[in-house]
Image (tube, rainbow, N blue to C red; front, side, top):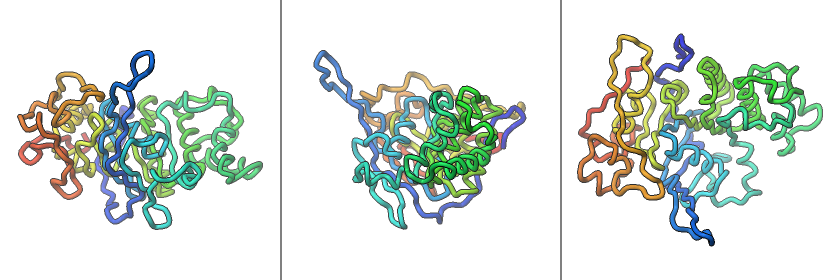
Length: 355
């Protein structure tokens, strides 16, 4: 739901997609960026932006990916889209009933995936070419893939603009003539042009006013129901994520530390980092008292991550084992996985649905 201030309220999702086939699966996904120094630009280390991420998205499902800035969320989205090459790991996508290994395919072999997967960018201002009209922007994917041209292309663009709530009379205008919310709708229309099955939404509402955020989120949910889209929804706002997601994966310093259905993760978090993130959600009920957990220290350097659990330097529950052994992501409840040595013994505070 959207509260009276236009902000997404924490609301659990009741859809059951457990029987839906897996659309995309990533295993052991890593991306290390080299660090160059000196006159000869020698490699002196690597930034471990993504370090061993496992995730899966089912057909018609929304997986929310959350975490602080610098946790590696956007890099995961780019790896999933094959916009950047992984250092290690695999990405598989369902095609003709079978999961196809994307990391082994060349540029020409990926053409089918470029039609089946799309992206909505964070910034609705810089993601649209100011020299192109709306017709050119939305119709570009159709031209590149040879789907439509001429009057057929114009008809398809008109259909897409109506679909996202824009006037067809404006398709000959340039991006500067539109507001931020309208520009993001143009970006959504472009992302839907080829009727994709998967969409990576990278912070799609963070640059918008809260009232416009609600409109865009409702539009995305409506389009998902209409076309059976699957979303990888990347955000740092857990209130927004809870509104649109079926499951949530929490990232910290390049790794996923917890993943669960929305209801389970928000009500009963099992990782201390998740508990801290949930405590930061603004409360719309003035009578509810919630303790704010303020994490101490800075996020460690991904070029030199700490040993053991990467969160132990900021964790109030850390013990010796946390400093020496890195926890693995394991299932502690149905569809609920967590990477924490003390997950079975800690009683962490969650968030009341609807608050």
